[in-house]
Length: 283
Image (cartoon, rainbow, N blue to C red):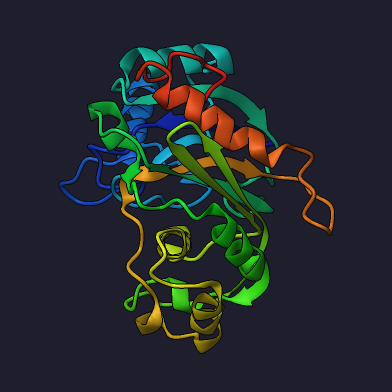
């Protein structure tokens, strides 16, 4: 019976043109496929991610599956080590394991979590690389009120780019968690799925509320309008992290995890001393 390999991947997306392979561009998928092909004696390997991340977006636990050739046979832990020995430092394989033949990184997923980082304090090189500097975003009470309005099942057409082609714009947001960690504001979104640039659009909406230029009622009107032209500008890519992909949940969206912990991991992993990947268990 055919077996697939499931990879869990962390990456700094700053210097990449996103996840998906593109002609003449450096991408996360392209780099991993290139090394896999070398490890499997130049046999072509195609990996399938849980979804695409845009240029400049990062990941703590992106997932991808592929079907390995019969020969050479590489045990998962050996594969993980070999990949990490050859991949750029900005891409790390956190784990590799065998999955069933019917498992697919994208189609088997039942939910995802993203964290967006806003820096309200001093601008520092490593903070600027992984966060949006927005010192005026201080009204977290109003942001939480707005987050409650956005939580649930809605048509999120207003929070994507005008050029997005959407077959079904309805998505279910299970939670929007907002944490304060010193100067950092950590916005974690958990949902059944997300439209293209939807998290950045929602973050932009919450940010203008936190900065006082719009209120909750105005964001509610934007949501109801279902017109992307009504939305505020999306947040920049550099502060966004794909935190986790979920493959099991009950009907209520309970993924058996602590949503607040995701934001904490992101803070610890990238802003404690500015060291990337210092803790294998952190973001």
